Image (cartoon, rainbow, N blue to C red; front, top):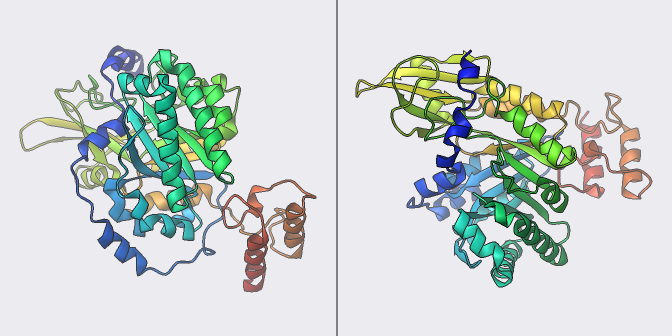
Length: 434
């Protein structure tokens, strides 16, 4: 009955909804990052391109600039791509702030660990996007500026994060992405082009099918179903229990993209919300805007107060009485919640999963262990999947290189999206080590 009662809560308040990426960008706009100190620490770390896991799916994380201090400590063996967040665009296509992009050691550091790095470009708002997308010269200005930034540091591609898109810009966004793709492919070998796309397309503003065909992947922002301004506390990324949930979202994308599963990335939250609520009952009515809590912050609350498991939505939640004599309720995705959603993404044979945001787990390692459990290949170097690594696997790799066999994911041992002599060298070392 609770799920039925809350069925229409989200659409009733969607007009007040704000994108979480935009909200976070505003919240941290005045933070000062000491890039040089972080880079200095990273330069003391030995780099090893070969010692990384073989992953079965794409694992893509956003690294916001305000989490830059966390990059030396990420487990790069469990990531395939990182989107640096962000280069902020103006309505005319100028770069307002690229957050030190052209001077970041992080790019070399990640690439040396076999992880692709993309620049994320952001612009939010109906008026802002209309102004940019309707004007050919503004679009070209944005594309040229972003291409210059990517080329200047030898990055691997671009991620476009345009949110709150008005319906009348549906075709113009497709045009922009076509123009951007043409420009990047004319100047780069195999650039990776992705987009952040909404969990719910309330006004049919997004041409998912065309965008999936143009890009290498749509990063579905599968979170913020319940958000800061929700009238009731609830799960940020429900899988079940509600009409609008992750299952609805994925099915909607599959229907609208003609089942392009290989172009869909299910983005999931390393954050939750903490609301002041009326009482301690589940889904209690909220009394104020919710405060975003990183996974690490939610875990600390969990360790102190203890949490409950909501089976219907596959989400964790907790309630407590704070210092102002007010009930609070915090919903977040714990390791069990994320595990179920990773399994869901694999069941639907999606390209992979995504993380908003890297660094939000701080010193907790359980989410890294979870990625390892779900996405690490069982036998690295076992190309023909016969549970051994031997000369037969080398022969297969050679045949792929010379064109006698098609690309096999498990043959890309360094996860650089190419199968070449480096993969043979890795395979030889694996065999010798055994």
